[in-house]
Image (cartoon, rainbow, N blue to C red; front, side):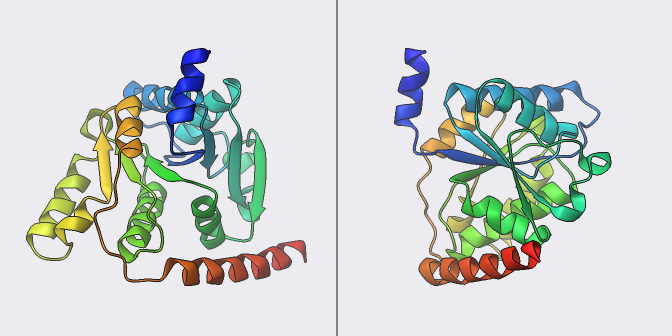
Length: 221
């Protein structure tokens, strides 16, 4: 217990946003990685922010954190809240109007981002927070758990984009990767932004708050 407290007191984070598949994939290693990440968050006393539901890797990591006594926030569009679609969200549920607000709220409530293996949705969420970091909208660390080399081709693509002049070398450093949850979280703890953003963060946050307020009004109606 004392060791866990020491780990948490040294952490720069309070909440970690996890992107991952609503499927468990075909390899046991993907499921093991989700459970390992859940245990790592619990051991560091870090809250989980995720896209809601209880299926696939999303369900595994959220249930593991919840089972370990961690606080879980599931942010999910009302249209996906049917248990037949996503299963039952554990912990705190924050319904939102649509997928766009879901991503904005997940970002607002989190101090860093971690991607486990996943499909189109995981990749879309991941690339959006990377792009926001590139623009200077946020400076929160972004990391991949590269389970069994799952993200090797994505990392190769990023290196190719740097070589061909589409991504600045300093911006390539936005994305951190490691093969295990423990290694990745430690890298994120040590992350220092090395890129220059182009958008005023304060102005962007004010705009998002205004947008979120109007969307919440729509939900209430």
